[in-house]
Amino acid sequence: MWVTVWQVQENMDSDVVRARSFDNGVTWGSMNWIGDDSSPDYSDEGSAKVATDYNGTWIAFWTNWNDSGGVYKTNIE
Image (tube, rainbow, N blue to C red; front, side, top):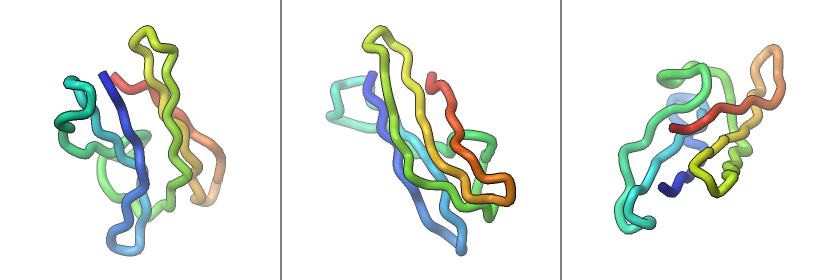
């Protein structure tokens, strides 16, 4: 499996999304929001990165510039 993450901007909101490929990047699945958001939430997120341990574990990291701020992460399945 391959994973990519990126920032999308819509309606004055930026969020981090991901997509997965199961055929070495020939085709990609649909875009899905990651983190606490299931949809745009008017909390700016960005600077997305992804890492793997090469054993099937993928982790995405990103920055959230809402009131609390901080760096967030999630496992990608």
